[in-house]
Amino acid sequence: MANDPAPTLRPAHRRGQQRARAARIGRWAIILFFTITIFKQNADLYETENNPFIFNAAPTLQNLHQLVYDTKFVRWLGNTALAGVLVVAITLLLALPAAYALARLTGRWGARVGIVIFLTYLVPPTLLFIPLSRVVARWWWSIPASRSRSRSGCSWGSSNRSPGSSRTPRWSMA
Image (cartoon, rainbow, N blue to C red; front, side):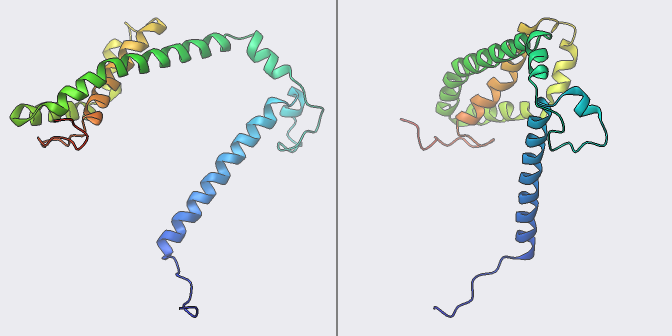
């Protein structure tokens, strides 16, 4: 046993690991570049001879000050956070009872309802959103639009039901 060579990876698996490693390095390089760019002076950013990964001039907080005080970034961030929290809360409030009911539904109706809910995934969200583009002029309209898409997914996914199956899930109390 001690003389057995170490198992070797197949070439396809090795290439997959190399690609994943390269993707991780690329993501971290982008994050590093963005972090350095936040603290650079404008003159340092626009000079083409400067190295983009080092500070050629003294770091500054001017860009952060401009972002926070001269734009509506903080308001946009707050609106996005509020809309996200409301979408999650409404989705959980409506999807959990629906998932429970769907999991308990057996027979022909259970299979049909499961298939119909699954088929809603096949409709692209963009196709559903185009007719509403004029209605969604205010930020708060994004909550019902997001909720309607996420509710069906959470109901079907939480019910632990494959399309066409009518079995009771393992975690059911039935």
